[in-house]
Length: 214
Image (cartoon, rainbow, N blue to C red; front, side):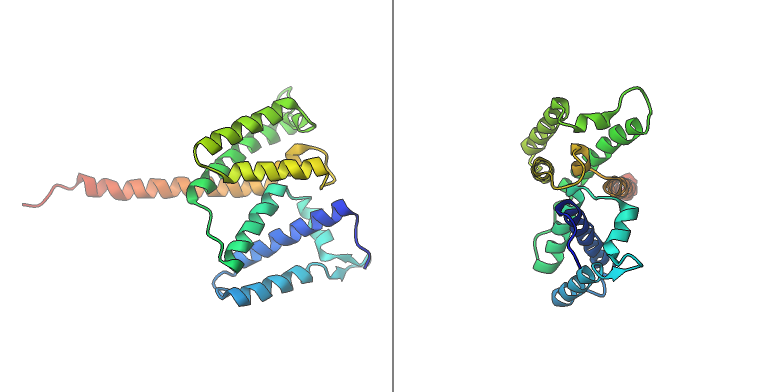
């Protein structure tokens, strides 16, 4: 099987890694053993390269037709999740995860409505080397670093390196930073964190309201 061009190969590899991480999370109960999980990931990784259909394209090519190219941010998070499960790397702090999800959700709220034509301004245009976007990213990473949050600055730096190297077909920086799947995941995480905070507050309230017994 002939290898695809470098940009296509990078996109397919990214999709494969994300699928493997998602599968490992989905079957976490059955793959608690790291060795068994490692073999399952290798089998899943190889399976998606199996040629299928009349064109004998790898299965990943058909998945790519549905998912489109994934952002560097999502692929990096998938690699972190795989490393955590397979090699015992420490889990990301909840504070880092929630802060990243909030930032992604805010960026998605700015990017996608304007890109779909809501209003007279399109934020997607900023991704073609605009100093406004680069300056905003620099300011955001500085705010995160000063607050001890290193996950987002690391992901932004990685996306900028990939963008400068032309790793993806797109030349727009937004496509390296965010994608719809990442935005949906950020929305789910923010909702879950909000519900968890409400539940904890609700559980503390009756205890605080009860009068001590004589």
